[in-house]
Length: 429
Image (cartoon, rainbow, N blue to C red; front, top):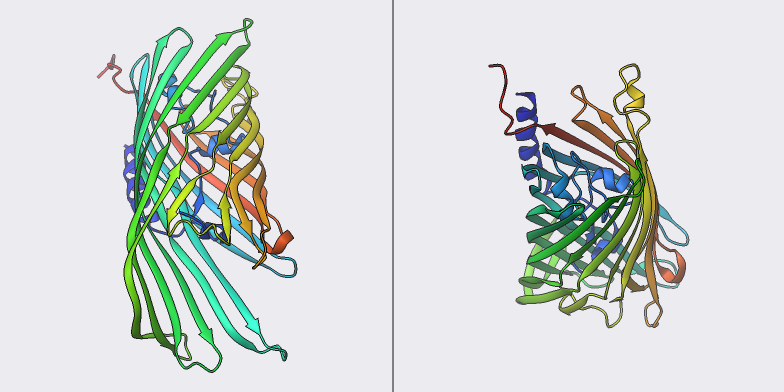
């Protein structure tokens, strides 16, 4: 009964939390915002591995083939607290945000097949930047504020099927939807009214992911894991409106619209090439596991208002290499709780596929890279099947060179994995 109550509370919280801003990154200005990737708290705690990883009670968002190993009905949801410090060559500022990062439900259909359904954000827009032009006396004569908000979410379903001994195949499909708003407010000395441009758009799309995994025994206690996932090329289409109007701003900051200068439709398309992830790992069941993953994707192709590459940014090839794993001292210990805890750790280095020009009038495009280290704990609950998982991640994204911004982040993640046995006939009523 307690699990059912927690399950329905999680659904209600999820519906509310997905409507909130979940990033403060200035790099969320580009395209459809800062992309989160599809990984659980457990996977991120291990450096974002997952292509070859499988478990009978933990979910794997990277490779749907892993669902063939599932033996328990599993409800999971994750929460992210993001502490962010943003700095340029001279100044810095900090922010903090908390949001629900995913909700999923999975269960085994047979001993060879498992299915999953879920909902999670895939990208988020949440930035506020001010550019000030001053005269020789240091007085502001032109102030422009850039701000944006919104999210793109996905609803998805998938399955994993064991085709023959050691080999599994998986498929996942999703539908993406969301709303993004970008605003530009300009105030100039000597001009009574300010101007504001608002781009309000709805984003829609769909994608398909294929996965495969192979597991074999090298020695009595040592297993070799191999896997690959392929998120096929897909398009995100956006339609909306653009409005430019004049306004007056009161002393308290209240905005009073005046005259409409321009109003018209917006259209854009973001073509995302196939994303490929390979992984290989070694491990001993319920004892330890270590793996290396490599992800690669060609440059995104943007058209319409998504294409702002002429001066400010360009898309390029992206890739990520990550390594990590877990260790359980003694999973069935009856004398020590901490010996039953799962200890996780990992590291990642990623080229995000975004090249930004931070020097107006130049042709200097700098790759935005992301480096992070992570660790976490899997804390067993009373029945030893369910777990509370905590994860910590520290990293750096971007650079202060070439007029750009550097982000230093500390992420705290929390997830609850509730496991139960379904379709098992009771022996005693």
